[in-house]
Image (cartoon, rainbow over all chains, first blue to last red; front, side):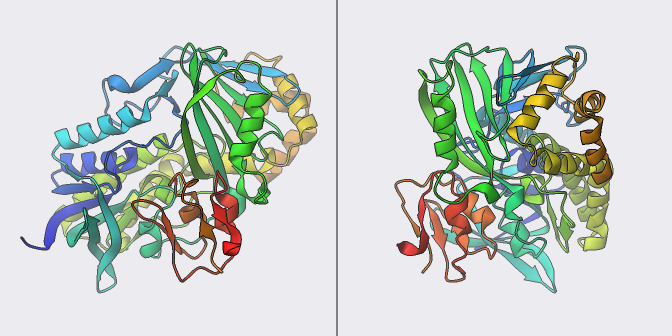
Length: 397
Length: 58
């Protein structure tokens, strides 16, 4: 058989952003292929699995599918000395938070793309890009030991935190170590925590990051922790920090780990570029993870819709130059770049707080009635009690 | 010397690959591979969530 395949649009990476890019590209008439290096879409899971459902309309998803594991009533934030801030999610509208099954979620997003006409190939890894006159025109791939080329008019890089595609395309450089969170998580069962809340633990038990408990059912939860990479010296790993956290938590220490997840997340500021000739980056590959929460799915999927739609337009117009593809970049920046910058600045500040300050802030905030998990609301609360602290935040913004 | 991967500990999460400043680690099907471009900066050793790299093969 021929050693070259040809498509209008090639998406590299079959996570939520990749599938969504494929879905909207195919919907708009482009012949679209999504390739995934792993043998199974969605597996193994590399995610805390906590998410809001505020984005469904924007992604034209009318039914949530089989992937909601448990709906949450709210979130609790714990300071190092045990002050608790409870944030109750408003049930009105679609702001409800939930914990999902990422493997089922990713497969559902792939299903939606396939239903709109996108093709998929799993266990198919890109090993390099194809170039013509300085423009990306496809990828060299390896599938089950066989190497071949896939040519396409537009390439979408959706290959996650460790994106090779973005580097091959010369779009970005290394992430500063201070902007990498390195994470470890167990799925634990036989635990005893309030299963209707997500739980966040601040302070030096997770330097520069936080520990989390995201319940999956009455007795089971994802229990994880992220540490700022630049605070690791190689002697204590994130796994060690998590083991200590669990040993010191009454509701967790008698539980059993039934799954282990490792990974890293970029909490960098928004990227300077997300396009080059012939190529657009989406999702974690373009570093649009929320720097405060470390959540990347929602921004990634919103971006992916814009990229998929523009890819189909570009194919129609016979354009693949970066000037044309910059329309995608303009759209996503208008949609959420300001919020990413604001949260990045807030994160930079939060990382400087010591345990005493976390205690003070959480204590101050717990007197308020907070209905929404919003950075603005939290800042307003701090403003009332510690105006001098908020002044520093405002100077940064 | 480049860092040595203790394969039994590796969870194939890609943290080292994403953190490598010179793109010298590629996550192959079974494990990360460190290429000749490694500058021995040690970031992969520190970023690994489970401590699967031994610095400089020591």
